[in-house]
Length: 372
Ligand SMILES: [Zn+2]
Image 1: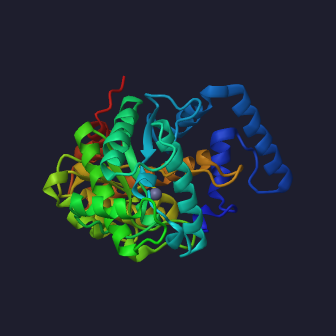
Image 2: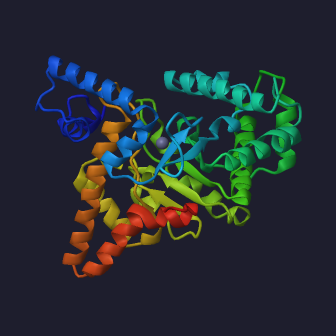
């Protein structure tokens, strides 16, 4: 694990103190056991109100929850749904890709299970025979349904599965490939890629039409099997420059480390935004502050706070990661703004304005959130 995500990171002691009143300054077995009991008790007492209670401790008004389904206590306006649309890009036989490494084996197996569930919602017990049906009787209606059910964006984690370079493949070609292979296991890899390329762009197009943002994982991924070279945000150039997709808002999730400067120079495209989620645990607060500064000096209207608060263990869950990233990212933002003031780039008043934009207002504008 990267240093800040290791179980013995002393920052988690502080998180436990802030969240659960942990009284100790060590990871001794008895103390951690006591902490786990306290956590269980608070969860039980708070019940469905627990997730909102955590947000209050973190000082977060609205959290975007990147999930397949929303769970108990994850209600608007405090939680907003970002639905995982990735499995719809991989409807054919994935056995070849699964062989590349153990992570892809797990990821594609998950995708296949999810796609089956998603199709089941529309009474498909197997893949429709024709691409037309897959699009008009499944992809379009499921995106519309998610929107009606409160989703504000979809998440695409294709970078864990393949390259982020998506060619503009004609529909007739996609139809041909889909029909040829929908009942066939001997799949040509290049043709399957072309179908995936087409599906990604079609999902993005439909999202633009109905007003869902498209969240794309860019840059480093977790797990030790991740292909960094095919996860650069610059690989999205042809998608982000496609006039047909100009009504789709893309958010470059995590900001693309180690390609944060590539992300920065995509922010001048009208429909491209970025958050710096996960950077607050992948790197130091100082390094994050220099990324934030460089983005703010280029396109401050497109920069958004983010945590990537996900559960690792029972002791370090989304709560503790949320605590660490929130504290570190706020400090990094303060450092960036202070240095910009010292260098005479901005006034104190503008620094406050920029802080509010990054932490709140840019997201409200992008997602059209109505808050009280
Ligand atoms: Zn991600």
